[in-house]
Image (cartoon, rainbow, N blue to C red):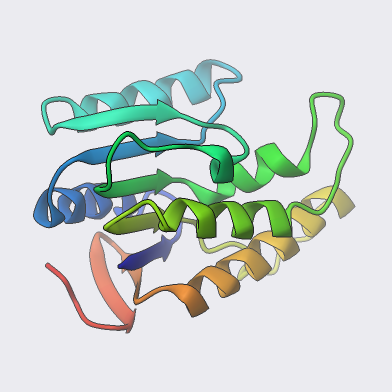
Length: 174
């Protein structure tokens, strides 16, 4: 089963995703795609580690190329998050940019074949009317395409609003 969770920043996606993992069963894998790059990211990573503590997750840090990941056993996988994975695949350390659509979507497809349940966290981006730099605009556009492709493949899609899951596809699981 594939579950896609989307919503704005800090809307409860991670909390709900972890609750789903606990509901769906072990073994539980947390694939962390946020690359540490400064104090802000280090604080967010530490917060998420604290949230997962004692819940039976095996954390796998994977910033790119999730398609080549080999899980030890089938189980429930939480991929957090597609936004970071997309940025990591899109921009290299020198700031060069490429379209990561195929790598991200194909990689998640390959990951899904190893899971009983795959919970994918992403952000709703691009719905504001802000003006972005050309590079950020390209990122927003490709992430939107990736999110749409993942939603098509998913059995369940929920948008989280103020911590409340709003079912867009499938049924409410918990």
